[in-house]
Image 1 (tube, rainbow, N blue to C red):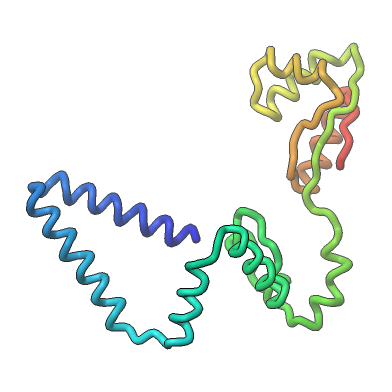
Image 2: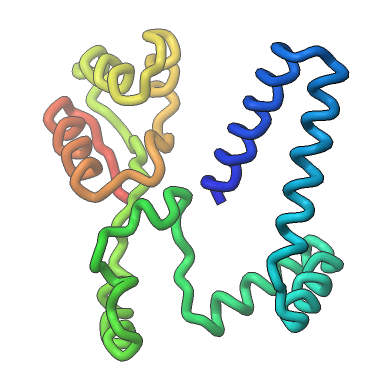
Length: 183
């Protein structure tokens, strides 16, 4: 998905550059020729009638029907939901490369939580300035915002934090006198 977006952005940038360097008449004829060539090149490629019929049917679906289609395809083809990072975030040779039989055995192990939400529950009043400075550094807030944040405890500090980072933050905050809970 991101590759096609990047390609579209590059094409738009090229077209803008071409339109600023050429005259308006020359650039419009150039664009018409580009689109004509692109259109002709797709017609030249033989598309199976079965594929063409499926594409026509999918293009007529509503947004909700398309979402249902995607969900049913994911369940039938055993495609896991990927985080926003997509395929680049998956390690090479990881669970995606494992056979289907092994995936059934690994399902209980995959249920183990890897991303956590950190919640500031309470803090020691004597250590309040240190905790405010630490929250300021962790969340990138101003001093006033971090003071208000700490005083409004219990409050969620961070969401979707990897286990190792979450444990480090909890240990640091515990040393300062704050109670932070992993959820």
